[in-house]
Length: 432
Image (cartoon, rainbow, N blue to C red; front, side):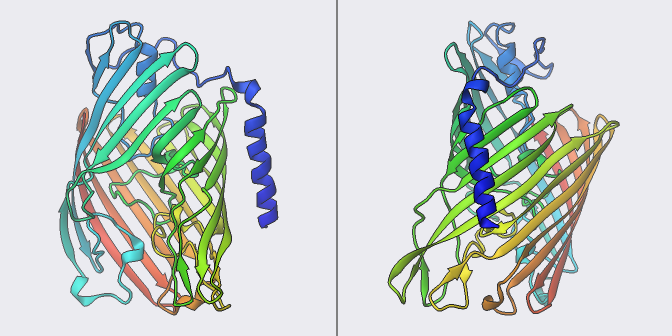
């Protein structure tokens, strides 16, 4: 299986790089008659010349539901060649956990469900506003390289789930097809995530932010691809015979995507990792190959119905999965003394969204993350997590949104024991 994945990933990478001359002049199509949105406040500058830049600011094709949308305030230079957008949202949530609670702030993390049920944590009331966010986005165009961007986004979760401190979420630069900085991993398909009030999101959803250097060409109107080298982060379960060491090889994700219609797409992705550790008994540094393959996308049907899906399988890619990131499942000890292995795992998410009116929609999802071959960690080790969401969102006036959500989570351990939690959550959010 590893050899096959190596071959597929190598061929995909070679195709992306070797065909550069074919798509070097191609770029993502932007509306020719894009009008400045009514809600935008434009300060100075040539509005007519700046329309293509505003179209980029309002492009939502790669955004996750929780990402802030287009900015309210736009600054254009006198010639309309550079645009600066300032936006974000103020987000407050109220939640009540019953028949099982999760002690992790506003995040409904299935991994953190107590097993067995903790009698002291059966119910919980909590309110939070630290996922409010602010962003700046600058867009311009050069005659030689095409469009360029600078983007920075922060929220206020820097002091942990219960705290309020400034946190850098994204900070990147892009020029043409090349992007560098802190942003969502190339392996993560942000647009394939189901809308939820919960900022943690479904257990089996891909969610990872890395320092990356990405090449993302547009082959034609429908086909695109991406490949990147990314800062490797890994978290291991160790014992007295092994220890974690600094990673020496970047993670390498690659994807190919076909898009059509109104922001519908299907994407095939692959991930390669070289995970380093030290065998203390042999006094040697060793490496384990980690990999994953993923199918993801979104289909927007008629009458406001949308389907979201993503599913992956592989070894040692826990860093990229919502419920498994930083839980020690990238590498675990194996039966041989002083040796470690990348455990098999899988994750998936399926969701639906239905718009009943221009200012009202509902969404629902089911998701699961699962780990195999972790018997060495004991009976209380994580076996799988299940996540169910049902949500409704209503815009009282443009940009002022309220929402109500029910969440159910179930954690199963290796010994067959289970823990569960239920949450009712409310939302008040104003975007600007």
